[in-house]
Image (cartoon, rainbow, N blue to C red):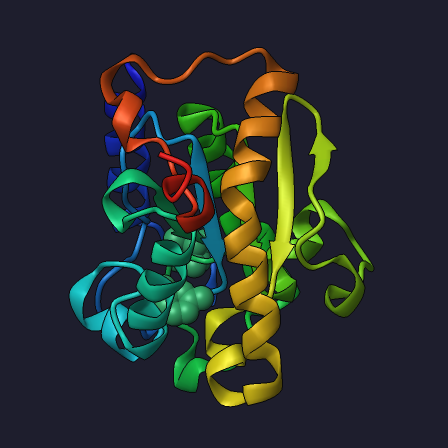
Length: 211
Ligand code: URA
Ligand code: SF4
């Protein structure tokens, strides 16, 4: 199966999944979306109100903020893969429970394997803790660490930064570092630039002004 076919099959399985209690109250499942060959994968927490209505990740206020943050890194949402640690909305946007995270984890694992990104950016602590159990986001944010055949960078959740003004400069700064981290990740992993889009490679404003 091609990565595209794999992702479509995972989404189909999620659409009828009843492996945890969240299936009872969901309206639409939110498997995640993006190119099967994305170099960067963002992993958030869980669908909220608007995501549950539309079946798409990050479409509410935090989605608009995420798009601004992506532009800090010279990226658009069309060139990254965006997913969540759970694919159905927790009632009232409560935190996902350990048994829900465990039940849904295999879909996320399968998506990571299908996309095979060079960098995973975790948004918020539930996503970070999948890779770094017990890590503190206040210390770990923005730091790129190798995990197996790729790199993981924890970042604050965009919704947290929207509600706590003090976090905004940190999250903006972390996104601004992403283009340089991608170059480093490609070099270390020995991955060439994706052939299709030499000029779609993330550029920081600083790099742009050199030319
Ligand atoms: N929307 C999502 O899809 N995920 C989040 O974590 C928050 C908002
Ligand atoms: Fe299945 Fe995940 Fe939805 Fe639970 S949250 S019902 S495991 S798709």
